Image (cartoon, rainbow, N blue to C red; front, side, top):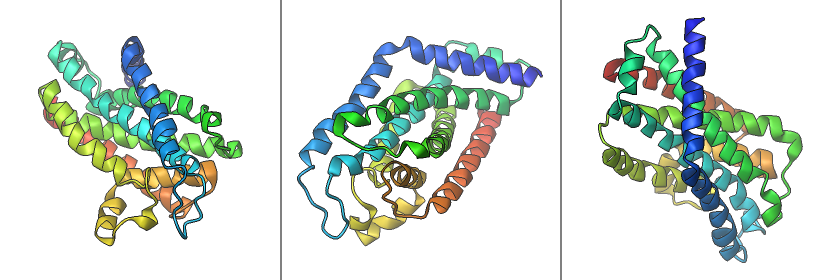
Length: 250
């Protein structure tokens, strides 16, 4: 019971801290919408021969939902550095709760905010005339949960080995952009060079974006069951790595 209360308390603290940072929340949502409207609109006249894509904004939309999840989830890891900097982490470490419960509370908190922001983007589909297949909403939500769990765990794992905000931001800049552009969020995977495809297949976000695109607009690359299998494995692996990192570094 004490573990459940601890997870709930950490989750609530993470969500409250993020909600208090209204500038970051608003800027994250606006960034995604600007990408969709400006970048998508600029390429809307481009036709991808042989891929059956006639509306680029519709193709881009699931990728922007994935981008929102990526940025918010990964930067949730910075809370570890904040907690270490201001002494809150010491209070948790000396408490009787396990490191896994500590990690789970933070993952739930970061995932809640990532999900909330991504849902706002999803419900703005009418702005660019994307006809979302709302009958798939439960599976869309499950996909978003798996993506955010994987990426928040990755961000927390990286942050547990760093001591400064500057170091975290530098590392994230070298991780987030490649993950985004190698996920198929912006360009069809079919059009990518052969040498780049092994990096695409190693990127867990590729399968999340593909699942979102399949469920939202019905345009798949991999099979949906394979996307879910990889996402479940990636989420489990990152949670396990995060738990080990917390035990080793906290």
